[in-house]
Length: 126
Image 1 (cartoon, rainbow, N blue to C red):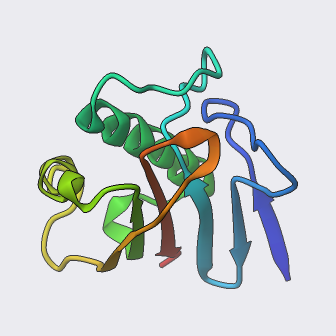
Image 2 (image 1 turned 180 degrees about the vertical axis):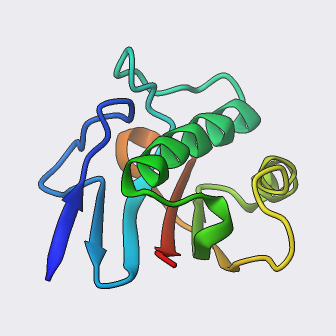
């Protein structure tokens, strides 16, 4: 059985998908770009600010699902340019402590709304 998670504090989906789905003990968060949930606008000040906005969005969805960052088991990061890797990593490191989740970082040609970064997460409900 699956259940849908939607946080009113996170941006609304911009397509036919849910913010997150709980399936058994797993929570699958849809990819998040740097949309400010209050304004609906894409944050584009800097890659660090974009990453911070994404992690804010992720945090409120995780909270709505009843888990925290310590229960994240996999992170997928999509970057429009790998030159952002070090700056993204700085922000990323403030959200996770050992043992770290599995992770992949992939360079892509284009992201929704011309965002420069998108992050998706899989968590495990203990």
